[in-house]
Image (cartoon, rainbow, N blue to C red):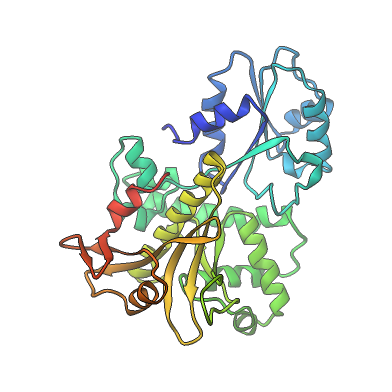
Length: 373
């Protein structure tokens, strides 16, 4: 299947290198090979492949190569200097696409050596917005149950989707984590992973997790950072600017794969909304150069709203997620009236969309389908 970011990536390749990152098995290799079809002499090289690795190290591709795709290059020692050398000495016709299942931009601290030489694109799981723009059917219950990764989402066999998820989790926890650090206690990391699956949407206390697993809070932070770097989870932190009494701690944790969430349908629905909103934020940033961020709102006296879309450090919209047709959230109402923030309540089981005291109440499927990507 096509991916909606394809034309943006092709256009950026004409100007600089492109880094394409995202979770394992989200479709980066498939997308890269689709893009390669737009070129006459493309070459795909994966650093995990021994033969490809020799070609990479020796720069032994043909002079006529017009698109060079380097997959998992971040596993190569001094990969940043290697890329800088290639980019600074390459022939004008050569375009370079670098892909990987890790946060090349942050975890490995790309830094000044590649500054100004690349554009970043983050490929995330399928969303209602992307499916809608591709004229594909949107199955909300399928996204909640199977997640948005292409292989499990596109299968009609729930057993196959479950088998995919088990393989995915085992690959990440048994192999990928060791690309970042020498994990001394893999069982503790697995326990942190399993606990996070049950705490989606709730503020996370590192100290409390540490006590549950019998490790230090610093080790918990380290494990969460690794899972975040591998695009397994992401953090949503409180927004504080111009919000009195805001807490500056305790992020909420969500999974890129909604199918990993252990909890009721409300937790899964909030996780799906979080991944779609983050995808919207990344797409606005990566493709349109707009300064978007995703946060949540919380005060010390207990008022909390699930999400806040931030543009240029100003709240553009606050969003509360509900499973069924409840009354307006009291916290959403409080933030809307006190700070005059545009507010919307998105609901799965909704009979009629409406406006209630200047707060929109709309279908979650309609809301997510109207996002940028």
